Amino acid sequence: MEIKVKRYIKIPMHDGIKLVADLYYPKSKEKFPLLVFRTPYERDSQDYRDSAKYFSSNGFGVLSVDVRGRGDSEGDFIPYFNEGVDGYNLMKWAVKQPWCNGEIGTYGGSYSARIQWLTAILNPPGLKTMISIVSPSDPFVESPTGIEEPMHLSWRYLVSGRTNKDNKEINWSKIYKKLPIASMVEELGFEIPDYTEGLKHQTFDDYWDKISYQNKFHLLNIPVLHISGWYDDEQIGTFINFTGMKNKSATEFSKENQSMLIGPWGHQVNKDRKLGNIDFGENSLIDIRKLELDWFKKYLMAEDFKIWKVRIFVMGENKWEEYSNWPPDESREYNLTLSSKTAANSRFGDGKLSDEYTGKDYDEYIYDPENPTPFITEDTAEQIGGPDDYSPIERRDDVLVFTSDELSTDLKVIGPVEAELFVESSSPDTDFMAMLTDVWPNGYSQRLCDGVVRCRYRNGMDKVKFLDKGVNFVRINMWNTGHVFKKGHRIRLDITSSFFPKYSRNLNNGQDLAYSDKIIIAKNRIYHNKQYPSKLKIRIMEK
Image (tube, rainbow, N blue to C red; front, side, top):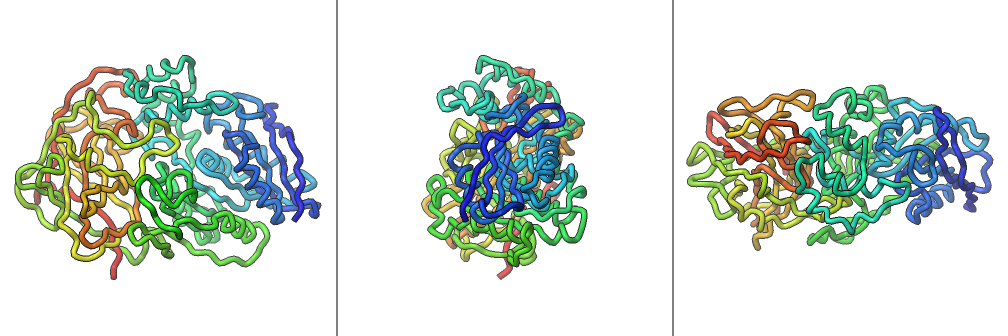
């Protein structure tokens, strides 16, 4: 289908600011359903043009828009704070145009996904469906630590002007180590006022609620296609959004018309069959653009298209499977208990994952914020971590390593992963990190998923409660996985108190997280006995 393009359309917002957009549309149609795509990454880039041309050649109009303060659009770029209202006004304008038939869908990934949600909760005119790809969550969901994580600053630098800055030339590892955390931005040589303001709001309050959507699913009544990858560093948002819409959205129609796709991908979905050292095979890549087209035809053109509820790529087996729910109805909870006979420190210790408690009552280690446990990743935030080998990290004595026996048969683990720990610390506030890995027969310890609890927030991000004297209970959400541990492999849980620089270092002092630089060394302890049964919680598939 032949297409045409109207460029540099100026669209007025409620406050007089004008957003700039390009409209791609089928030449043969006077009216058409409209797809809206908004981005902070320059609307005229090659990938975005190709996507717009694909959809418009199949009968849709595509409005590709620079968000406020980026690209050609006017105003100041303050991430997320203007996007809900701007999206509402954009659609209010679009449905009045002679070429729009009043049916609107939205699509996009990462920033472009989260801003769809912030607009959708305002119920803009014409919005009928969304495709949300690798959507970030609300504040403090991915990083429940009370402050922006160090690596987020590399993204803020990238988008700090109207066009993307080169963030590869900055010595980020040096900046991430700067204390107090609020002083990191000084190393960049300019101010980011909203970044600095955010550091002052270290609990979830009205400031953060303005850019939150995951507590507002009840306002929504639209079908959504949710897409992410097992190694997307914002993976958790997709699962929260899918289950939230299925359980809490406004109508049965909305609840029944949610679908989720999870591949063996990082934040850039469906780009490469290989991630890090792991090759997931030729069928790990799919025709995702055709899937998106079929979704929009179903909900904007009333074409018949049957789609699964949940489709995931099962790592280890390297194949796609479909389910009716998440977690799958066919799965069941399976708990592995933590224990050791002498000490679980490092992979050279005797920490065990098994069905029973044996040996001593607890393991302990020293956490020194000046020598944090590393998280394996590149310096910038484009992709944070992957299926990396953590066996070198597991040599450290400040990492407790609990490992199962070799598996006698394959074990399929599909669903959310949690660690429930009974802990004690010499400090009023500290962190506990947990990581699930697959230990291959050759010793490669493949990261699957991980999570963190900052103890002052163990009862929720809306309040601070420091550790009680003695034993405290904490739960670590390690997100989700879909993986087969093969026969001869072992299941491993690592427990430590830092994954730096993925998460900011807790200085153990109980003071202000952004403005304090006082470092205290903590002695941290994990209990594992019948009275205090620390455990790894996974879900396994019934045969």
